[in-house]
Image 1 (cartoon, rainbow, N blue to C red):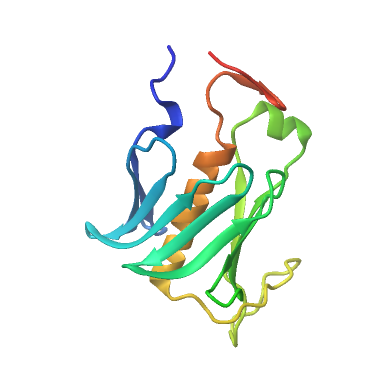
Image 2 (image 1 turned 90 degrees about the horizontal axis):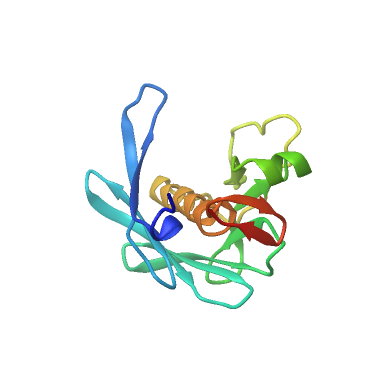
Length: 174
């Protein structure tokens, strides 16, 4: 059966620690043209990500309360790297959707994302094999929660299967 409104349907996701304790929630209400996704702690909104409509670019505004702290202006459809920048255009973090191979990408709906919060005077040693991202400042915990909400929104907006099976550039709907 075809799912009505598919990826435009509302949802709530709980983000938990390793013991199952809820750290925060991500709530996405129903949307028509541009989407928003909210980060909440104990039912209180701490931040939001608003998607701006553009014909080919992926543009998102990230807020803590009513103050914008970052913007993502992805340059094109085939670019799978989303860089969070501050008002001065300086890098705060980066979200990458990793390419996992042609067969994996075409026949599954499983995506793998990496969020790099970078180093800005950090004493934490980088993970082996990963080049550390240079950032202008470290994000506070609530900003990181909003960045994770952005990653969820990106997956839902651009990379999740919209029903049926796919061949690149063609959607074989149910």
